[in-house]
Image (tube, rainbow, N blue to C red; front, side, top):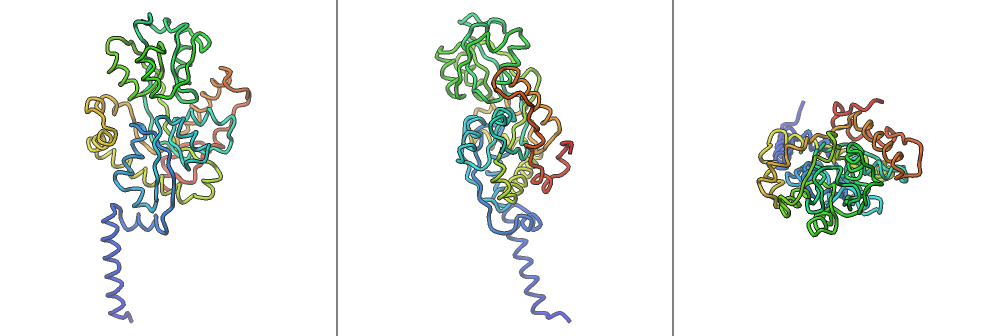
Length: 337
Protein backbone atom coordinates (compact mmCIF):
# COMPACT_ATOMS: atom_id res chain seq x y z
CA UNK A 1 0.00 0.00 0.00
CA UNK A 2 1.41 3.45 -1.00
CA UNK A 3 2.29 5.92 1.75
CA UNK A 4 0.16 9.08 1.15
CA UNK A 5 3.01 11.32 2.41
CA UNK A 6 5.51 9.74 0.01
CA UNK A 7 3.02 10.02 -2.83
CA UNK A 8 2.54 13.70 -2.05
CA UNK A 9 6.28 14.34 -1.97
CA UNK A 10 6.73 12.53 -5.29
CA UNK A 11 3.95 14.60 -6.87
CA UNK A 12 5.47 17.85 -5.56
CA UNK A 13 8.89 16.85 -6.90
CA UNK A 14 7.41 16.11 -10.32
CA UNK A 15 5.71 19.51 -10.42
CA UNK A 16 9.00 21.28 -9.57
CA UNK A 17 10.84 19.37 -12.33
CA UNK A 18 8.19 20.34 -14.88
CA UNK A 19 8.37 24.02 -13.85
CA UNK A 20 12.16 24.10 -13.99
CA UNK A 21 12.20 22.37 -17.37
CA UNK A 22 9.68 24.81 -18.81
CA UNK A 23 11.64 27.75 -17.42
CA UNK A 24 14.70 26.65 -19.37
CA UNK A 25 12.90 26.35 -22.68
CA UNK A 26 12.81 22.55 -22.96
CA UNK A 27 10.62 19.72 -21.86
CA UNK A 28 11.43 17.44 -18.90
CA UNK A 29 12.27 14.70 -21.42
CA UNK A 30 14.82 16.93 -23.12
CA UNK A 31 16.24 17.91 -19.76
CA UNK A 32 16.57 14.25 -18.81
CA UNK A 33 18.43 13.48 -22.03
CA UNK A 34 20.84 16.31 -21.30
CA UNK A 35 21.10 15.20 -17.64
CA UNK A 36 24.21 15.22 -15.51
CA UNK A 37 26.87 17.88 -15.05
CA UNK A 38 27.41 20.46 -17.77
CA UNK A 39 29.82 19.48 -20.54
CA UNK A 40 32.28 22.25 -21.45
CA UNK A 41 33.13 23.11 -25.04
CA UNK A 42 35.07 25.90 -26.76
CA UNK A 43 33.49 26.58 -30.13
CA UNK A 44 35.31 28.47 -32.86
CA UNK A 45 32.45 30.03 -34.81
CA UNK A 46 32.37 32.04 -38.01
CA UNK A 47 31.05 35.48 -37.09
CA UNK A 48 28.42 35.66 -39.79
CA UNK A 49 25.16 34.49 -41.30
CA UNK A 50 26.26 31.04 -42.44
CA UNK A 51 26.81 30.05 -38.79
CA UNK A 52 23.35 31.32 -37.82
CA UNK A 53 22.35 28.10 -36.04
CA UNK A 54 25.24 28.53 -33.61
CA UNK A 55 24.34 32.12 -32.79
CA UNK A 56 20.63 31.41 -32.51
CA UNK A 57 21.27 28.40 -30.25
CA UNK A 58 23.34 30.66 -27.99
CA UNK A 59 20.79 33.48 -28.07
CA UNK A 60 17.84 31.18 -27.31
CA UNK A 61 19.64 29.35 -24.51
CA UNK A 62 19.62 25.95 -26.21
CA UNK A 63 23.21 25.15 -25.26
CA UNK A 64 22.58 25.70 -21.56
CA UNK A 65 19.22 23.90 -21.73
CA UNK A 66 21.01 20.82 -23.01
CA UNK A 67 23.65 20.81 -20.28
CA UNK A 68 26.37 22.41 -22.37
CA UNK A 69 28.66 25.18 -21.17
CA UNK A 70 29.84 26.77 -24.42
CA UNK A 71 32.51 29.42 -24.84
CA UNK A 72 32.26 30.91 -28.35
CA UNK A 73 35.28 32.44 -30.03
CA UNK A 74 34.59 34.46 -33.17
CA UNK A 75 36.51 34.17 -36.45
CA UNK A 76 36.05 36.00 -39.74
CA UNK A 77 36.58 32.81 -41.75
CA UNK A 78 36.06 29.10 -41.18
CA UNK A 79 39.64 28.57 -42.28
CA UNK A 80 40.83 30.70 -39.33
CA UNK A 81 38.53 28.84 -36.92
CA UNK A 82 40.01 25.56 -38.15
CA UNK A 83 43.54 26.92 -37.72
CA UNK A 84 42.57 27.56 -34.09
CA UNK A 85 41.29 23.98 -33.82
CA UNK A 86 44.58 22.62 -35.15
CA UNK A 87 46.44 24.82 -32.66
CA UNK A 88 44.40 23.42 -29.77
CA UNK A 89 42.68 26.72 -29.06
CA UNK A 90 39.11 25.48 -29.68
CA UNK A 91 37.40 22.08 -29.46
CA UNK A 92 35.03 22.39 -32.43
CA UNK A 93 35.27 24.73 -35.44
CA UNK A 94 32.72 25.83 -38.01
CA UNK A 95 33.94 25.96 -41.60
CA UNK A 96 33.13 25.07 -45.19
CA UNK A 97 33.78 21.43 -46.00
CA UNK A 98 36.61 22.48 -48.32
CA UNK A 99 38.59 23.62 -45.26
CA UNK A 100 38.54 20.05 -43.96
CA UNK A 101 39.53 18.78 -47.41
CA UNK A 102 42.45 21.24 -47.57
CA UNK A 103 43.76 20.01 -44.23
CA UNK A 104 42.93 16.32 -44.68
CA UNK A 105 46.11 15.63 -46.66
CA UNK A 106 48.19 16.60 -43.61
CA UNK A 107 45.85 16.04 -40.63
CA UNK A 108 44.11 12.66 -40.67
CA UNK A 109 42.73 13.15 -37.16
CA UNK A 110 40.04 15.67 -38.18
CA UNK A 111 36.40 14.59 -37.95
CA UNK A 112 33.24 16.15 -39.37
CA UNK A 113 30.30 15.75 -36.97
CA UNK A 114 27.52 17.45 -38.95
CA UNK A 115 26.53 20.28 -41.24
CA UNK A 116 24.68 23.40 -40.13
CA UNK A 117 23.98 25.07 -43.49
CA UNK A 118 24.41 25.08 -47.22
CA UNK A 119 25.08 28.44 -48.82
CA UNK A 120 25.50 30.43 -52.03
CA UNK A 121 27.35 33.53 -50.86
CA UNK A 122 30.63 33.66 -52.83
CA UNK A 123 31.16 36.12 -55.67
CA UNK A 124 33.98 37.28 -57.92
CA UNK A 125 34.34 41.06 -57.76
CA UNK A 126 36.62 43.09 -60.04
CA UNK A 127 37.53 46.75 -60.39
CA UNK A 128 36.39 48.29 -63.68
CA UNK A 129 39.23 50.80 -63.59
CA UNK A 130 41.65 47.87 -63.96
CA UNK A 131 40.09 46.97 -67.29
CA UNK A 132 37.89 44.20 -65.90
CA UNK A 133 34.58 43.94 -67.72
CA UNK A 134 34.30 40.20 -68.31
CA UNK A 135 35.86 37.10 -66.72
CA UNK A 136 38.58 36.77 -69.37
CA UNK A 137 39.89 40.18 -68.29
CA UNK A 138 41.09 38.60 -65.05
CA UNK A 139 44.12 37.19 -66.85
CA UNK A 140 47.31 38.63 -65.36
CA UNK A 141 45.43 40.40 -62.56
CA UNK A 142 46.13 40.35 -58.80
CA UNK A 143 43.24 38.42 -57.24
CA UNK A 144 42.63 38.26 -53.51
CA UNK A 145 41.36 35.03 -51.96
CA UNK A 146 41.60 33.30 -48.58
CA UNK A 147 43.79 30.26 -49.21
CA UNK A 148 42.51 26.88 -47.98
CA UNK A 149 39.00 28.31 -47.74
CA UNK A 150 36.09 27.42 -50.01
CA UNK A 151 36.95 30.62 -51.86
CA UNK A 152 40.15 29.06 -53.19
CA UNK A 153 38.25 26.12 -54.69
CA UNK A 154 35.52 28.31 -56.17
CA UNK A 155 38.07 30.69 -57.68
CA UNK A 156 39.83 27.78 -59.35
CA UNK A 157 36.54 26.49 -60.76
CA UNK A 158 35.44 29.95 -61.89
CA UNK A 159 38.69 30.49 -63.76
CA UNK A 160 38.52 27.02 -65.32
CA UNK A 161 34.95 27.56 -66.57
CA UNK A 162 36.10 30.82 -68.16
CA UNK A 163 39.15 29.44 -69.96
CA UNK A 164 41.75 30.43 -67.36
CA UNK A 165 43.84 28.68 -64.70
CA UNK A 166 45.34 29.66 -61.36
CA UNK A 167 48.64 30.12 -63.20
CA UNK A 168 47.07 32.84 -65.40
CA UNK A 169 46.54 35.14 -62.42
CA UNK A 170 48.51 36.35 -59.39
CA UNK A 171 46.92 34.96 -56.23
CA UNK A 172 47.16 37.13 -53.11
CA UNK A 173 46.37 35.24 -49.89
CA UNK A 174 44.33 37.53 -47.63
CA UNK A 175 41.91 37.32 -44.72
CA UNK A 176 38.37 38.40 -45.68
CA UNK A 177 38.64 41.83 -44.01
CA UNK A 178 41.95 42.40 -45.82
CA UNK A 179 40.28 41.57 -49.13
CA UNK A 180 37.70 44.29 -48.53
CA UNK A 181 40.38 46.86 -47.64
CA UNK A 182 42.81 46.01 -50.42
CA UNK A 183 40.23 45.77 -53.21
CA UNK A 184 38.67 49.03 -52.07
CA UNK A 185 42.11 50.63 -51.84
CA UNK A 186 43.33 49.31 -55.18
CA UNK A 187 46.16 47.07 -53.94
CA UNK A 188 44.47 44.13 -55.69
CA UNK A 189 42.45 44.13 -58.89
CA UNK A 190 39.79 41.54 -58.09
CA UNK A 191 38.78 39.01 -55.47
CA UNK A 192 36.70 35.98 -54.75
CA UNK A 193 35.13 36.25 -51.33
CA UNK A 194 31.82 35.85 -49.54
CA UNK A 195 29.22 38.07 -47.95
CA UNK A 196 29.12 40.31 -46.04
CA UNK A 197 32.50 41.14 -47.60
CA UNK A 198 31.08 41.30 -51.13
CA UNK A 199 28.25 43.51 -49.88
CA UNK A 200 30.79 45.80 -48.21
CA UNK A 201 32.92 46.08 -51.35
CA UNK A 202 29.90 46.95 -53.49
CA UNK A 203 28.74 49.49 -50.91
CA UNK A 204 32.14 51.21 -51.04
CA UNK A 205 32.85 51.10 -54.78
CA UNK A 206 29.32 51.09 -56.23
CA UNK A 207 29.37 51.18 -60.03
CA UNK A 208 33.15 50.91 -59.96
CA UNK A 209 33.00 47.11 -59.70
CA UNK A 210 31.68 44.25 -61.79
CA UNK A 211 30.74 40.93 -60.19
CA UNK A 212 29.71 37.39 -61.04
CA UNK A 213 28.32 34.48 -58.96
CA UNK A 214 31.39 32.70 -57.66
CA UNK A 215 30.18 29.16 -56.97
CA UNK A 216 29.39 27.97 -60.49
CA UNK A 217 25.98 26.75 -59.32
CA UNK A 218 27.44 24.61 -56.52
CA UNK A 219 26.41 25.10 -52.89
CA UNK A 220 28.97 24.60 -50.17
CA UNK A 221 28.33 22.88 -46.86
CA UNK A 222 29.06 24.65 -43.61
CA UNK A 223 30.17 22.00 -41.14
CA UNK A 224 31.33 21.27 -37.60
CA UNK A 225 34.90 19.96 -37.37
CA UNK A 226 36.68 18.46 -34.36
CA UNK A 227 39.67 16.29 -33.61
CA UNK A 228 39.23 12.55 -33.22
CA UNK A 229 40.87 12.32 -29.77
CA UNK A 230 38.74 15.10 -28.29
CA UNK A 231 35.51 13.71 -29.76
CA UNK A 232 36.26 10.22 -28.45
CA UNK A 233 36.76 11.68 -24.98
CA UNK A 234 33.67 13.94 -25.15
CA UNK A 235 30.91 12.11 -27.08
CA UNK A 236 28.24 13.55 -24.78
CA UNK A 237 29.39 17.11 -25.50
CA UNK A 238 29.10 16.44 -29.25
CA UNK A 239 25.63 14.97 -28.80
CA UNK A 240 24.47 17.93 -26.71
CA UNK A 241 25.92 20.38 -29.22
CA UNK A 242 24.06 18.72 -32.07
CA UNK A 243 20.84 18.55 -30.04
CA UNK A 244 21.01 22.30 -29.37
CA UNK A 245 21.68 23.05 -33.03
CA UNK A 246 18.76 20.86 -34.12
CA UNK A 247 16.57 22.93 -31.79
CA UNK A 248 17.95 26.09 -33.42
CA UNK A 249 17.12 24.59 -36.81
CA UNK A 250 13.54 24.09 -35.66
CA UNK A 251 13.37 27.68 -34.43
CA UNK A 252 14.56 29.01 -37.79
CA UNK A 253 12.01 26.88 -39.65
CA UNK A 254 9.16 28.21 -37.52
CA UNK A 255 10.38 31.76 -36.94
CA UNK A 256 11.98 33.08 -40.10
CA UNK A 257 11.50 36.77 -39.34
CA UNK A 258 12.62 36.46 -35.71
CA UNK A 259 15.71 34.50 -36.82
CA UNK A 260 16.69 37.24 -39.25
CA UNK A 261 16.19 39.85 -36.56
CA UNK A 262 18.44 37.96 -34.15
CA UNK A 263 21.27 37.86 -36.69
CA UNK A 264 20.70 41.46 -37.74
CA UNK A 265 20.94 42.61 -34.15
CA UNK A 266 23.94 40.45 -33.23
CA UNK A 267 26.06 41.62 -36.17
CA UNK A 268 24.62 45.11 -36.67
CA UNK A 269 23.50 44.45 -40.24
CA UNK A 270 21.20 46.62 -42.30
CA UNK A 271 17.72 45.20 -42.89
CA UNK A 272 18.41 45.43 -46.64
CA UNK A 273 21.41 43.17 -46.20
CA UNK A 274 19.36 40.57 -44.34
CA UNK A 275 16.75 40.55 -47.10
CA UNK A 276 19.54 40.03 -49.62
CA UNK A 277 21.55 37.35 -47.80
CA UNK A 278 19.04 35.19 -45.92
CA UNK A 279 17.53 33.44 -49.00
CA UNK A 280 21.04 32.36 -50.01
CA UNK A 281 21.16 29.92 -47.09
CA UNK A 282 19.46 26.66 -46.14
CA UNK A 283 19.91 25.85 -42.47
CA UNK A 284 19.83 22.16 -41.56
CA UNK A 285 21.75 19.74 -39.35
CA UNK A 286 22.39 16.78 -41.66
CA UNK A 287 25.04 14.33 -42.91
CA UNK A 288 24.20 13.68 -46.59
CA UNK A 289 25.99 11.42 -49.03
CA UNK A 290 26.35 14.44 -51.32
CA UNK A 291 28.75 15.92 -48.76
CA UNK A 292 31.25 13.10 -49.32
CA UNK A 293 30.85 13.42 -53.09
CA UNK A 294 31.61 17.15 -52.82
CA UNK A 295 34.70 16.55 -50.70
CA UNK A 296 36.04 13.96 -53.13
CA UNK A 297 35.54 16.42 -55.99
CA UNK A 298 37.37 19.14 -54.07
CA UNK A 299 40.24 16.81 -53.12
CA UNK A 300 40.59 15.78 -56.78
CA UNK A 301 40.76 19.44 -57.81
CA UNK A 302 43.35 20.16 -55.13
CA UNK A 303 45.57 17.32 -56.37
CA UNK A 304 45.14 18.25 -60.04
CA UNK A 305 45.95 21.89 -59.26
CA UNK A 306 49.23 20.96 -57.61
CA UNK A 307 48.17 22.30 -54.22
CA UNK A 308 49.28 19.08 -52.51
CA UNK A 309 51.98 16.52 -53.19
CA UNK A 310 49.60 13.69 -52.32
CA UNK A 311 48.21 11.61 -55.19
CA UNK A 312 45.84 9.25 -53.35
CA UNK A 313 42.25 10.22 -52.64
CA UNK A 314 41.53 10.26 -48.87
CA UNK A 315 38.63 8.12 -47.67
CA UNK A 316 36.23 10.83 -46.53
CA UNK A 317 33.82 8.38 -44.94
CA UNK A 318 36.65 7.84 -42.45
CA UNK A 319 36.51 11.56 -41.59
CA UNK A 320 32.79 11.49 -40.73
CA UNK A 321 31.73 11.00 -37.09
CA UNK A 322 28.22 9.52 -37.18
CA UNK A 323 27.47 8.66 -33.56
CA UNK A 324 26.46 12.15 -32.42
CA UNK A 325 23.82 12.78 -35.05
CA UNK A 326 22.75 9.14 -34.90
CA UNK A 327 21.73 9.76 -31.28
CA UNK A 328 19.99 13.07 -31.98
CA UNK A 329 18.52 13.02 -35.50
CA UNK A 330 19.22 9.69 -37.21
CA UNK A 331 16.90 10.41 -40.14
CA UNK A 332 19.26 13.25 -41.12
CA UNK A 333 22.04 10.78 -41.99
CA UNK A 334 22.01 9.63 -45.61
CA UNK A 335 25.72 8.83 -45.82
CA UNK A 336 26.09 5.38 -47.34
CA UNK A 337 27.51 2.98 -44.73
